[in-house]
Length: 149
Image (cartoon, rainbow, N blue to C red; front, side):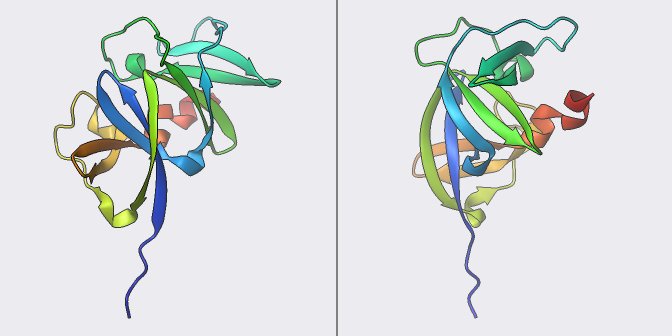
């Protein structure tokens, strides 16, 4: 009897020329950059909060979170609004590129060195044609226990 492989959709986004992916079911929306209200005494990678349709959402700059070179936002910069355990969090990314369909067996374990992102943030890598995506583990990126205080 043949097992049916679970299909997944991934949102692909860009940071410093590299492509990253997160499961589409964790994404609520993708928004253009908007004014962010700074919040005192938070980690440097937390840029502040936004009011999105009446909901206050903390915003994390993924370049800062991953210790990548900081640049000014561009016209293609986006905020990806994610939902993790009833907590909405936005991530600033350089661009939101694509939605791709994969099966679970397409995700390979992360090699010891994956670009510039620490391995603890990486679930695995996906190769589609000539493209390579780094699949992020949002639980690790967010460190939910710290955010919940």
